Length: 164
Image: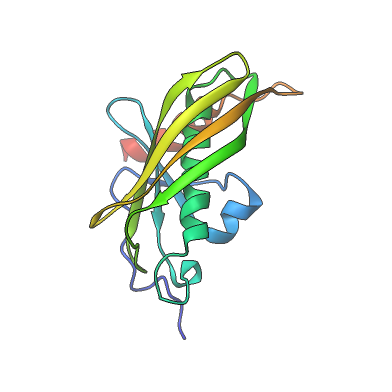
């Protein structure tokens, strides 16, 4: 079989390839980023053959991981730079199938917070509507070393490409 990416859609305009959020995400990606007109981070994902289950649909574990990444990255985008997050709980709902070649867009919202926890919801949408939703609880963790603000990393990544 030849390279499975040759027949796939290109990412939507405004999305740029995002550096992997972790080695695990790198195995399933690439993942693309975009900031909408309301300053909300969106992540895009192109379903490839390597993401498929036995039925030829995007594997649920890939969708689950994407939801975790979308919610975590969206929180980091808004959070103070001295903090990071760790997922404590994630509950997902699979509502439809994503096929090889489908372009998925993930969005998330911060639903609430306490001193040490953050609560978020997220969704993945494809060409036929919402594919999966999730809610999650994250632990707010103080970074051990000064960190570059995640928001500034995203803006720096997107800025040169949006001007072109």
